[in-house]
Length: 354
Ligand code: DAH
Image (cartoon, rainbow, N blue to C red; front, top):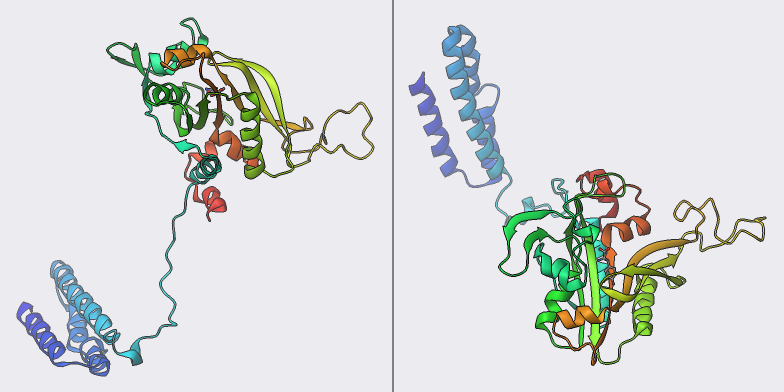
C-alpha cells in the first residue's frame, strides 16, 4: 500500500513540475483529486481493511490529499503577475483591526491640550519612596493616606527616603521633576496609581491620574484658573463654566476642588421648577440635579514643597492640579462602572474605537 501511495505522490509531484498555467493545474486537480482519481480509489478500499489498519492508512491518505489540495489551490490562483487571474475587486478575508483603549484615547486628548499650552509630558515611575510620595509633598507622618490600609508598601527600604511603595498618586512627579529641573517649569505627568481600595463601581486598586504643574517667578491663582478653564473648554465644550470650591491638600495652599457645570443639562431648570430650585434638572442622568460635576483638585504649590525640592519659595511660585482619567472618561462618555475599563470586553471597548 505504501509503495502505491508513494508512486502516486511522485507522479503528482512530477506532473506539477511540468504544469505551468492555471488551466493545466485545474486539469491536474481533476486527475488527482477528482472522483475517478487513484486517490479516491485508495479511499474506497479502506473499508476492506481491518480496523487498526484502516485508521493508519486513512490518516496517510488524508495527509496526501491535504498536501495535494493545498498545492493545487495555490497554483490554480496563478502567479500575481498574471493579470487575467488577479481580481482586484475580490473581497479580502475578514480580519479585525485593533484600536486604542478608551483610557489611552482620553489620556492622550488631555495631555495634548496641555501640550498645546506649552506643557512638557514626563512620566514618573510607578514604584516610589515615602519621601517623594509623601514627605516632600508636605504630607505629615500621621496623615491617613500614609496608613498601610491606604497605600501599598513594598517590603524594601530606599537608602535615605523611607520605604518603597506603589505610588498612590501622580503628585510625586512634581517632587521628582522640581528636584532636577530649574524654573520656569510647566509639566504634565500621566500614569497609573495604586490604592488598596475595595473594587466597586467607582473604585479600583489601580487607576490613572494626570498631574500638572507650573513653576515660575510670577505665577498666581489666575494663571491656574485660566489653564483649567482652557482645558475644560477644549475637552468638554466651550459652554462650560468652572466652580472652585475651597478644599485642603497638604501640598497646595490655597487649595481647591474644581467642578465643571453639567454639560448635559447645562444647569437648566426643569419647566415649572420653583424659584427656590437652585440647580439644574433633577432628571439629568449625569449631575442628578446638582448642576456641577467634580473633576479635579488643584492649588498653589505650598512654599514648603518648593523648598523641599530646593526651589527658592521666596523667588518662585507654582500651581498644580491632579485629575483621575477614569473619572473624566466616565463623565464624558456616561460610563457608569469603572470596572468596564479593565475587563477587556470587546463589546464595551469597540464602542469607543476610532
Ligand atoms: N494628589 C491628589 C490626589 O490624588 C490630587 C491633587 C490635588 C493633585 C491637588 C494636585 C493638587 O496637584 O494640587 O487626590
